Image 1: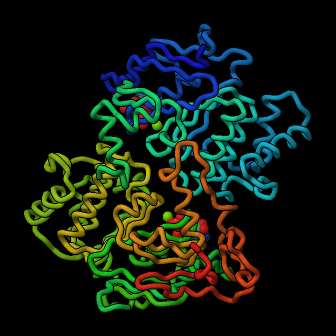
Image 2: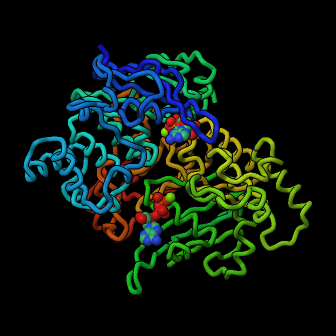
Image 3: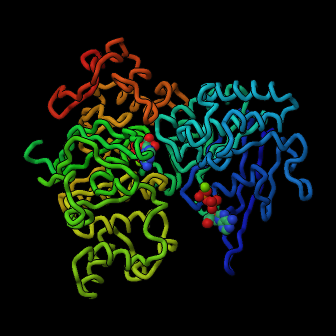
Length: 255
Length: 328
Ligand SMILES: Nc1ncnc2c1ncn2[C@@H]1O[C@H](COP(=O)(O)OP(=O)(O)O)[C@@H](O)[C@H]1O
Ligand SMILES: Nc1ncnc2c1ncn2[C@@H]1O[C@H](COP(=O)(O)OP(=O)(O)O)[C@@H](O)[C@H]1O
Ligand SMILES: [Mg+2]
Ligand SMILES: [Mg+2]
């Protein structure tokens, strides 16, 4: 059974008289222990769909199920224990880190919120989490503004992991950081998979998707226009749109 | 400085005023030339001083509380360090075009595209309306914006990110400058749009022989588009090498940057990451600033008073005391 599934997910936005079909009858599956990528250009609907998976956005129609059970129960999404199971990280980690709180404190508070532990223990757990994300004890005492973009992004992943999630949904996690910070973060995602996490990776960067994903969905105008195993999609794209995306990668062979 | 150089930067130092008495060094030191008609790539981690260098070329350091504290900065025979505000009026926009960092900041949100282009075209000249309109349309055509008559009346929020960036480039080339400084012009844009913008920059270079300084984090892109590559680390130029020779880099930092390229490893393969973080501004160690992150470090790297940028081959300069050991 798939860990997470979307069936005929549709999201409409009403904007000045018109309707935007941000997500249009999309079917999706995240198998246990895999990294599934969603790639597409801006405005294609990636973030809206990611928010549906995370339970933040209620679909206009269609449904999402976690281990076969709908995540929505009446008005409540991800009830009880399920709430912790799916965590999301965003492109701009400033949004998820309180600027007036030292990193260690922000993560320790998240630990206490999700795990039934005392303050001192929470701090220890937070410290370990941050260290596993490559943030030293010295740096974890800093405020978000004193960290580099890459460090902030890894801190926000540490914060998400404090909920001990089964699924991490990462929306453009590498878009705001430079290439060497990106390599660090992707290396960490690789490690997290080995420890049993499953990841939905949303990105407009095909390099990142190719490197990390087992399976890829290509999104355009709210629809998945092509899907398949990563090497299949990159070596043998069927859709014109996918071909165009791949040939736009800098330094791509057919350039 | 060779006879063909348009820009010559030598041991340039940039400081920023923090308080009345406190100064912080943010660039120390930058050294490289830009040849006429060349596309030069400027790379290095965030905070290495790339944007400040760009600003020094358009005379807008002061807006960030920064100023040139030493060295030489010469553009087409003009000393930019002693340039007066009246000199800058003839240089900024006219002879050096600037595409500032962040597509989001983009064009002025409360002015129509037509008004912004008019401003870029006029500068201090007085042109008649017809000329401005004709030139505006011509510029939008050069940057391949469709339906230019309509776009002239639109506001930036009507345009996509790629269109906004094209407008910024149209403004930058309005006066046919001999140099364009483009600071991360495609960061955050889609790959297809990025490819189009890069083609546009290449075309501008070949049609008008414009020199271009292109800042980017995207090393495959830099390799693809640029003739020469300048690598900045903690405020200093650590290497200048042609893109054709970059795989023979003799600086451990450049080599580390390039080995973290995800397009060169197998999917999920081992990524080489650079140890630690770049040293913080104001806390640069003495000796080589890369020493704490370097696999080739020896005691003398830390005890050296300076690490000079030396010529190691034709058109190849590197600032590593152990360059003759690197790549062996
Ligand atoms: N809250 C909203 N209200 C109205 N339109 C929206 C909203 N969120 C997204 N959209 C629109 O839905 C489409 C898809 O957006 P998004 O999911 O953010 O795409 P992506 O993440 O692929 O860039 C876009 O046209 C966007 O303008
Ligand atoms: N006004 C300022 N006051 C203090 N520090 C600054 C100021 N502007 C820039 N800096 C610092 O100068 C360094 C170089 O910045 P910048 O040129 O923007 O780097 P890059 O473009 O390479 O990312 C950074 O560490 C930045 O924090
Ligand atoms: Mg998005
Ligand atoms: Mg910058």
